[in-house]
Amino acid sequence: MGTNLDCELCTGPGGDLLWNDAACRVVRVAGADGAAFPGFCRVVWHRHVAEMSMLAKDEVRHVMEVVLATERALRRVVRPDKINLASFGNVVPHLHWHVIPRWKDDSHFPVPIWGTAQRAGAVRAVPTHAALRQALEAELSTMNDETP
Image (cartoon, rainbow, N blue to C red; front, side, top):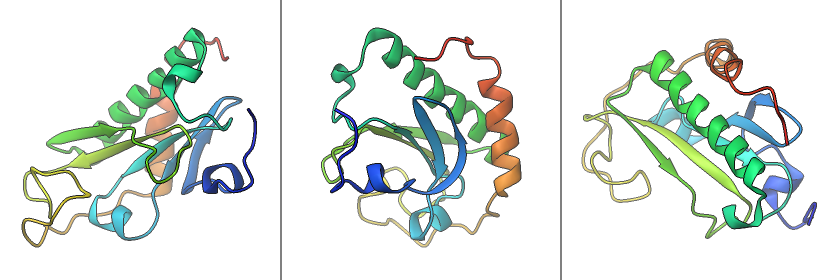
């Protein structure tokens, strides 16, 4: 499996590119979700696969290291109360992980961001592209040098 021309994550980045390697990329989500949840990122596997179980063991390890490095970078930059990690693929069946900073006073807390808003959320500064990229690169530099 390689590229699916009907898949939005095969034909486009899926957000504002922060980092990528031969296997995957990290993007900041653009649009309403990015504004409501500053720093909301996705880790997107380049090759079109639908499930984690379709990856080789070393590929699973690699994508999870990138997800965790993204979480650590977001904790450093936006200082959320919590980070939500999610991988659904129900709407876009292309392997990707959502890495979502959450605050106790955000519009949806404690329910998932795809649920019903609980209140008008607090306004927070949106981190710059450079700040996110720098923190992410610092976290990823500690990863094992092996790339799938």
